[in-house]
Length: 408
Image (tube, rainbow, N blue to C red; front, top):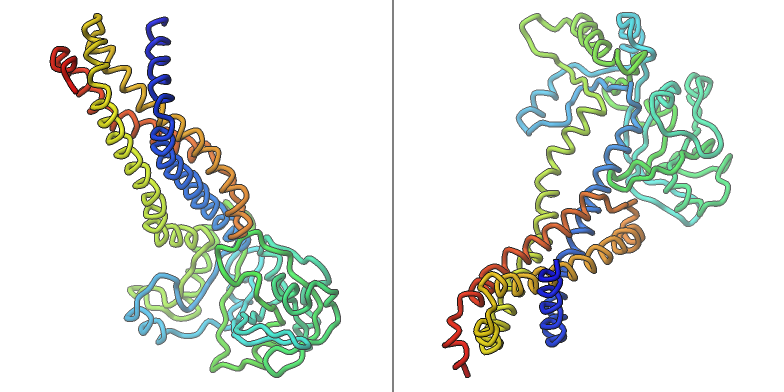
């Protein structure tokens, strides 16, 4: 133990004697570790918020649509030939699905909205049956949601997203105030609660109106919709999806040998698809700061090589006094590792602060650096220092003492 403490002390003394050079060497490692902690925390924060966002669809809910979400142009052309999904399917589907708690429908359009001098462009205008809200996990912040009377009477009432509330109405009370969607006047009856995610764009920039009103104003051939269905329990969701599939094939007279002419998917399948298409970007985001750590390791190796050259006579003296190759090797190796440890510790601290403050404030993404991010950044920095310190340490340990003593 005394020998180990002595070697560490000698390594620290050598580094302190070259404070400026050691500090500049550590700086590269600090930047690399800080980037790793911040980026890994950001990626994990995004992932968590994507999952939270899709959970807002409701864990028991699933969707029936004419189109899927993972297709190419050729598939899209084929899907255009399919029969439309209409609200007339709500009752027969519900009757044929004993494990379905409720069946609703929604349709979509895009228009600008205006209140006073404030205007927002290309907002999602979603027509819904009133029972769809119960299938989602989000709720009403103020006012109320559309009800069946609004639906039957085709009223021009609207529930607005939180961002619309803050931008159009500047957080003043919007209930019962009139505003325009396109050229049509609506009355605000409610505001949706704020979603905690910025990952899936547009969810806070939507306006919900009765489906009947939507189909009256934004007429489309056949008035196509997307069915929203909730199972009685989460365990029954897959069973309910199969019951709906069988019912729709029978209702739409799909031949036994043909594939479905509709798509059924759940929040789980949507999340899996999103993860698949973002996996490559997540890997790239994490890989880039790792390169900076490797560059920091190369800098450490170069600095240690310079240090070995400058201290050749010192190494010769130590060897002539009885220092073994292993002791010389360990001392120089410790110097490299200490530089990496210092850079790693400071980098972890700055990475946590960067994640907790800068990224949260700039990107509105809730980030809590996890143990994995800290271990990854700190572990890689230490490993890189150890790896790139081996060659200079071995070179120092193998110096011939006679030649080292005569080195100028």
